Length: 196
Image (cartoon, rainbow, N blue to C red; front, side):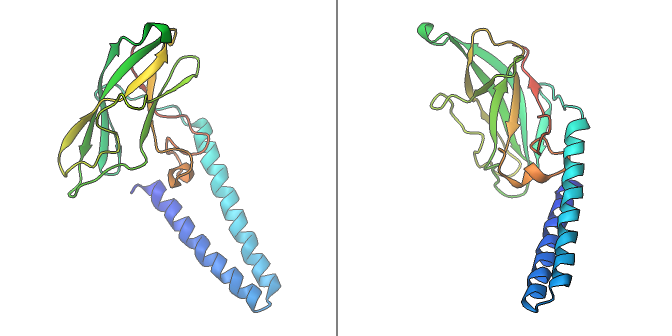
């Protein structure tokens, strides 16, 4: 856990304690005290969300080169290459196979259960992983100290240029509220340019 994750965890704990105190105050019919506590909870969350959105807006987009790992706790994902493949002629799409090394730096078997990848092109179009064409999933459980290779396949339009790979855990997970996290609200996603 990094400092920003600990801050969110502390805020969540403080909120839980504050809500319990507010509920107890309402139960004791101490309405003024309960409303005062509730106002503090709301004010702290408003400040936290303002900081989160400010950092998301002003922080520059992180660009990771091919061969450079992106780590999420003990699991690291490294794009090592990309290969073009021929798709179906009538489909008007181009297939790209992206090689990704998944390394577990921990001391027990781990997986990154929520991880997904997608491509984004220079026009902002998103291209998700093609189901059924990939072998080892990005969510594979990796033994400690080991590396496995996943090769997701993406079907992109033939006119797609400036393709970049993005790793995400999705929008509805705790990372959306972590200050400075690539998945946080309104944050520019960390990208790996594929030079395609």
